[in-house]
Image (tube, rainbow, N blue to C red; front, side, top):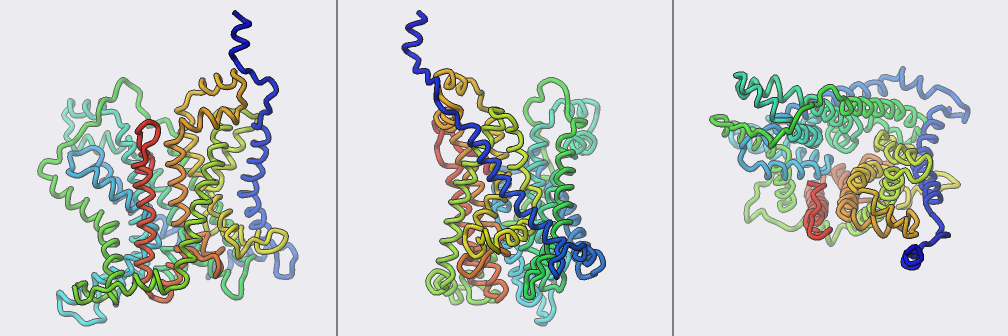
Length: 573
């Protein structure tokens, strides 16, 4: 019997195991992506004008009011954005997850649309809607009440307008976390409250909300972090209003004459604040004090809205209108009329902007080509690296594999503008002269998107039992062969979803990109920003709709692509 088994099992006793070489290569790659820009950032921050080491840049950061004020404004802006995002998202999540609100699936789809929309494009859409002189809403207001041209109702170029525009595209983070938490709240506690005489609002206030409060706080911290580190929206709305936040101030330090040392010193406190916010969010999410212990929770307890149904519908309609419907319609209207203030009629309808962008504007083709090439390159390389890292960490196949997980997650703590400064300092001089090429953008995008790719595939690996891999190993396969032949095919759904997620994140990135592009490496996001500087809102609208079309096509493909025997990807929903 033993002889027969040995003849049927093709044991490969001397097969070379690539696990350790792959591990070492990944440590070098991820270490280079994360540590090299941080090293040069720290080095330039203590480099004086005469080339000596000095703390003069940090002294300037403390004593110069033009540097202190942007930090103060940025912190106020971020805190206000986090609070407003929670006020918008928490009731919306409850209405969607736990009530009989009509069209709950449509609400989730619209929130996804808000999430996919690049925030800088949303800011431009609100420029079109609420600019004091030419905004569509102000034009309607003046027409309705017969007012003069200088009178207006809305002004998006204010601190309040900036917070509003930021909240429109950060509230989905809070919504997602709160909605998921509501889905997990055991109904036993709510039913017990009802049995003891607690009404709908009493149960909501004393039982449901305390259980989801940690998720709301964690989502608020994510919104604060997103607002604090964002460049595009403040650059579009704050600079015309005459004030800087810290991200736009760092960008301005690279304008002529450039001050890289001061920019590096200004970026480091932002890095430390980001690390603290991520730590705080992890502590809140990781708490166990609010978890419940008990039996089966059952299906979600749906609260009938009764007479409040239409008030709830009105609230949801307003939220979706200001975050998705009105901005999208504003972009569409501007794309097919000659001026923003011109009403859309058959006589004013024109394809002039479409023709200009697609056939006359020389930068369009190069920007589209660069954007799509970098999107495909980053998504492919990022997904492959994340797959290998997730496998080695999940299976602990190499001593020290957990180090890869830390390196793959570390870039989430590096704001885009900070990474852009670090990469500029790292690759703008020999021996690694990459500035002015697409390779420096590739490195930036790969670094920024690595945490998202790793987290998605790491979660997917936890659902795959290692028994099949162990059987493959018994039959002589190496770890890398088992990953390629057994595990990777089982993860096709997650791999494709991760690829799509990284691709979308790449084509909408602006914070790091703005410091790293040149005339030959412009991307669609940078072209949109440049056109906004010249006030060509019609061309911007066409390019913005094109970018949205590509993003939604990828999301649709990800959700429609049949893999794993007909299963569809739902990770991006």
